[in-house]
Image 1 (spheres, rainbow, N blue to C red):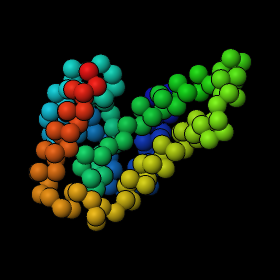
Image 2: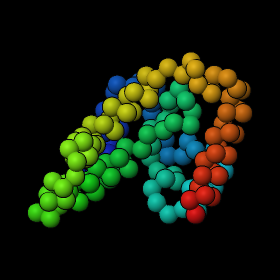
Image 3: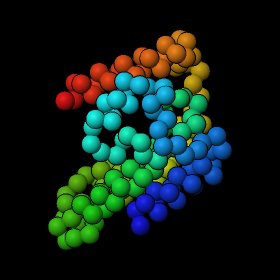
Image 4: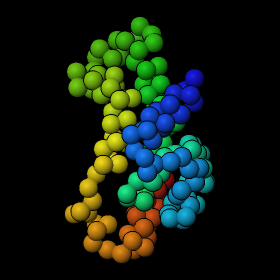
Length: 146
């Protein structure tokens, strides 16, 4: 069921963002260091279906992961009496973020698709330099988290 929800979320995003499409590994071609790290790291990030085609080539959306995290939040906070108590103990803003997570993921994908990049770093340096910079930053970030 979660897989179907992820596909439905991805297809809803694509319906509103015609340049987007599913891809299994858009990372390796443009961010090789990041891809090598993801390949060695357990989890859902390497060679998983994701949406790509955003104006910013390093941005991608992973609807299957979004649905999984949404379901995990619902399981933690909504399915049991203890979970409902945990939810009630949170601040109102935090409760709202949890209950709206699914729709917020959808809105974030649309916002990123429509985002204007006129003043960003990408507009100031050559595309290949931008990709190398992002690849280095992401790879170095993974090293610091180890």
